[in-house]
Figure 1: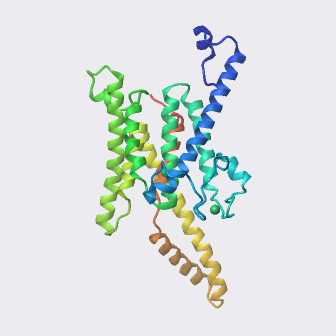
Figure 2: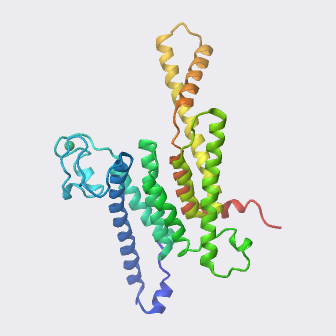
Figure 3: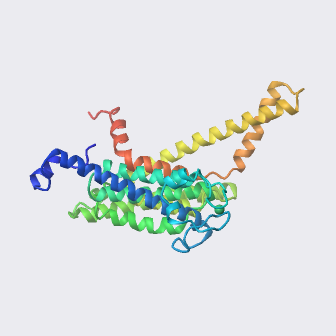
Length: 326
Ligand SMILES: [Zn+2]
């Protein structure tokens, strides 16, 4: 675990020995984890309330089944869910494991933000990005909605972080006279946001024109604008690629699963039917279900964006190994 360069700290006189540094790093990682758990708990409130247009500030959380307010000692991230066995203390209605999962994932990604981003503004940038992405992915998965309350401030936050953490991109090429890295970084962030949202908008318009129904919502356009503002042009392209890859795998799995179920059902109900006919009938009905299934693109784009933000540079370096420069 390398968070701080020990030499720097020892030279600066802030720390004396390596054991100090180890304790310091572990403490910092623990602080990020706890902070992530608490913000993950807040995200659960957002995921439930934002699509229902309820305030995320008040009133305090209550059981959706019986309405009993949840007391502070039953509201400890992850632990309370385990202690209560995933049930409301009062009415024993099941509480979705999503609550504990969101809290845990947020905690883990906050620690990763520190480990990968290093101690400094990049750790906060990656944490903020994880917070937004986890919130949006889970809201989209549950409700097929991407609330403006997360996407719109998220775009602003992405632009703001470009002033603190240098973002690479085409700006230096187009504005050779500009020397201030913050100006260039901000332009790169704007370019990423523009590319991401324009791409999705283009697909959405083309899809509507071709099939007469809305395929991708305007929420996806804002989501991709937010992602672009955070990761810049190059990684935005990677997100679009990863998102469509993950989405395609999901689509194929969905078709195969429905197909298998339909095969089993036809085997029970139409015993006289031949194998070939059964396969083709089941396949047709699987395709039909897939066509009518509303695919949560936001989930795949968000997952692709997390991979790109945390590991994208490494993936690009690895990929470039196959094309040695002459
Ligand atoms: Zn209850």
